[in-house]
Amino acid sequence: MSDPLGQLAYKTLQQGRSLAGLAHKELNSRLMAWLAPKAKANVVPLAPAVLAELRQSMDALLELDWREAEQGLYPSQLLFAGPWLDWFLRYPLVWLDQPAIWSRRSRRDVRDLPRDVNPEQFPDYYLQNFHHQTDGYLSDRSAELYDLQVEILFNGTTDAMRRRLIKPLLTALPQRNQALPPRILDVATGTGRTLRQLRGALPKAQLLGIDLSSAYLRQANRWLSQLPGELPQLVQGNAEALPFADGSMQAVTCVFLLHELPGAARQACLNEAFRVLEPGGVLVLADSVQLSDSPQFRGAMENFRRLFHEPYYRDYISDDIPARLGEAGFMAIQGQSHFMTRVWSARKPVAGAS
Ligand SMILES: C[S@@+](CC[C@H](N)C(=O)[O-])C[C@H]1O[C@@H](n2cnc3c(N)ncnc32)[C@H](O)[C@@H]1O
Image (cartoon, rainbow, N blue to C red; front, side, top):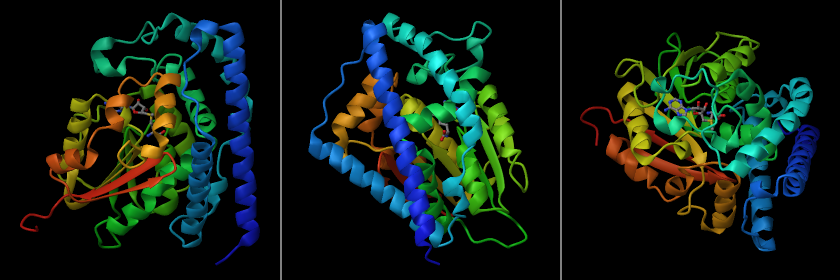
């Protein structure tokens, strides 16, 4: 059912989020240049035509987000959802954290982690301050600020990008007996924002989330326990060695993980997703666009890598993800780009099917 007023309200909300994100980043970079000049990153200037194309592709993302909600793929309330008061109250903490970030950037220190972290419990590639984030992924303070920081980074479009995995998921999810809800695992679930979108689209599904960070899972539990319905099961563990039985899931999702992994770990995660899926099960990935699908955004990708500590991003943007999916055993591989996100879906073949 068409709802022009609702759509206008969504557009207005998104314009506000976008302006808030842009204003924050502009002020932050000016203050950093003034107070911590050594922290400054050399960014590539983007041509006006590229900026216009970015703007258009963001508008197309929001238009599609609205349309798919109207089509009933997920409730339109999801488009307006956000812990607004919580974010408002936490915003000063984002600023209070900035001097520590500038200082680490000036020192080129990307391994400044809490003292009580036992490095033997984590892969070495993980023990870094991704995005120059204080404590990396390894503290409650980091987990409390993460959603708001990502919201600012992507000018308020992050959930709209996460929701792009819902349509391929619903389309490819194996048809099952109504009495047996699908089991869906979200790998690297972080603070659970993707699970929140999935709960909206699939209220009856049995949802599970796994992440290496217990602090992020605690935050996910706080958000998700406020939702009606079954509480998703949250498990601490490594995506490279999932603690689930072979063939135990109907679907696996994974959002914004691959670009934070070295190539071998990326492949290991895809292999593990394949193992835990039942034959006919579906994997849906969402991550950054790449050079092959969005060459026009090369400069924006380069700036992302220069501005935020993303040690594996350069390798990721030229990696052949469909080839990796094929190597893991997947078939029916499809990809689509939405603004800065690439979504791939792939199916685990049923024995004997070609
Ligand atoms: C950029 S965040 C994305 C989180 C979430 N999917 C989202 O959409 O916001 C990356 C997440 O991957 C997790 N992570 C990184 N390496 C991992 C691994 N090998 N196994 C499990 N989780 C991992 C981090 O703890 C972090 O929560």
